[in-house]
Length: 138
Image (cartoon, rainbow, N blue to C red; front, side, top):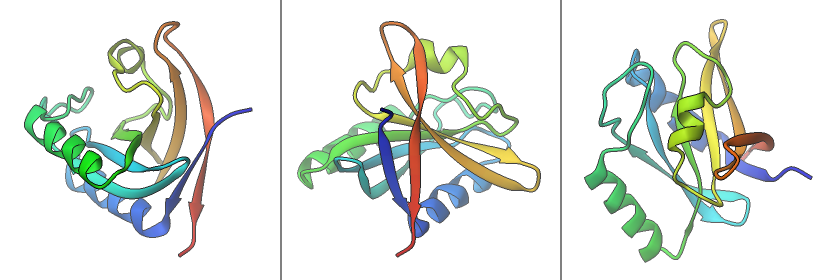
């Protein structure tokens, strides 16, 4: 059974705004919460400023993780965009993924719109399985 991740419409809009604002670069951030529910989206700068790779700014990442800890939240996911697709983890994503037990959310274009997909990454095997992403109305 695949894992689930729950985002609100407001959280989805926040992620999409961040992604669109940083085009053509990949955008990234953290998703904090408990269990399968996201309660906070933390936007982080792509330190590489690249359209095909991301690395979270180390200072912002540290502050974000400290915030999650201070608020008693878990790192339930990370997100980043693939501005030109595909809507699935790349080989680089699998090689560089360093967030065990959290889901990877990829934001990618579909025609004139954007889609969000969540994936569970097996770090040792460098494989992935799609998770069920639920966007909840508030």
